[in-house]
Amino acid sequence: MIKRKLEPTILEMLNNFRIVAINGPRQSGKTTLAKLIAKKKNITYYTFDEEDVYNTAKLDPNGFISYISKDNVVIDEVQMIPELIPSIKMQVDEENRKGMFLLTGSSDMFKNSKIKESLAGRMVSFNLYPLSYSEINNRDINIIDKLFNDDFYYFDVDFTTITNGSFVEAVINGGYPEIYTLSTKAKYAWFESYIKSRITKDVQSIGDVDINKIASLTKLLQLLAGQISSLLNYKNIADKIKISDKTVRKYIEILEALYIIKLVPAYANNQLKRVVKSPKVHFIDSGLASYLLNVDVDGAMVKQGELYGDIVESFIYSELLKHKTTSDKRVNIYHFRDQQKKEVDFVLESSDSKIVAIEVKSGSNIKKEYFKGLIALAETIKGKDFKGIILYGGDKVMPYKIDSYQFWVIPLKIFL
Image 1 (tube, helix red, strand yellow):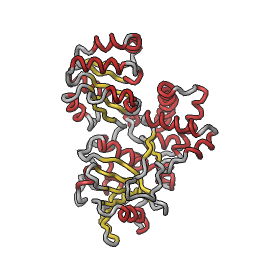
Image 2 (cartoon, helix red, strand yellow; image 1 turned 135 degrees about the horizontal axis):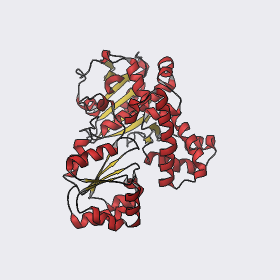
Image 3 (tube, one colour; image 1 turned 30 degrees about the horizontal axis):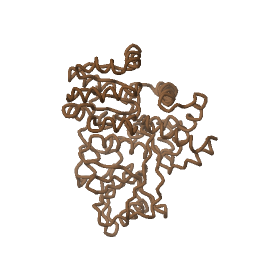
Image 4 (cartoon, helix red, strand yellow; image 1 turned 90 degrees about the horizontal axis):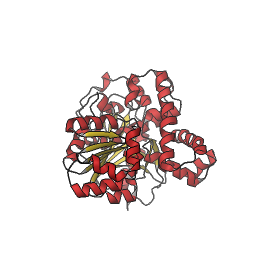
């Protein structure tokens, strides 16, 4: 079993809070982690995927919670019965016991303002994404902490020992735990089933979406996959799939709540008055995006064109999200684009206002023009602690100085 890096954090939080929640996409490993923690903490596990448990809780939420909470418990897929939340709030207020509830959910129901308000001060929530490659390869490293804290003269791996094929395979496969034991044909079948039986089903349950409009949702997923790493334009999307702007916004909000896609906001503060404010769209899992785009490992190895570069960028975003959940450094992730269309793929801003800016290039050659966006950002935020990085397809770590700015070139393989 692959050890999840979030596990120690969840165990610690259960000793300090009455409710701990683990959110994330379906099949990301939440149930496996919840069962493991239940065993280690000797607490009872309940899942609403079991029909009898679901029916009992749905019929009498107060009675169900009152009965099971005599001991600390795990409730898996709690979003299936949101009516339980008031009962859970009432019970933790009465008992006031640490670690009473470990909740998991496949939709970010805790973004709901009423739910958030009712559980404020009682609960902490964490995201469990599909496997990171540092988990798969059992590396004791947090990339975000590395990027903020290190001088890049030492890494724990020799990048020349990692083949380009291994990196491409990681990008195309993504991080869902079930993928790694499957043949190529079986992987396609898994992703097809995931879309049909999981995503569309969950969309209906949380979004009150008309079953007759599910085809539009599938088209939207394919269209969004084709626009990963691009600025999001709701009107253009609506025109292409013949639905209203309002419906597109609703569907995208649902897909984001289900941890399928993520909108990356533009980096902006008072100094950045000319920055374009549109978000960029990325998929949480590059394997799902690759499936929707019909890109396989062999095709990516041969072509490695713009489409592959966009998937690589989404892969890096996904890995950054995963490392963010366990990093010591608290960061937010943005993109940067000014009116001259100078861009930086990712801007990581820490809680102490330090900036790590990352430009992603899938090729192995470095050109001076690649630094234009980084320089534009550096000049815009003068006075802030700034570090500019290009992640590229080569094997060497190199410093690169332009004018007064010190940049670094680092292999994409840092994530494997």
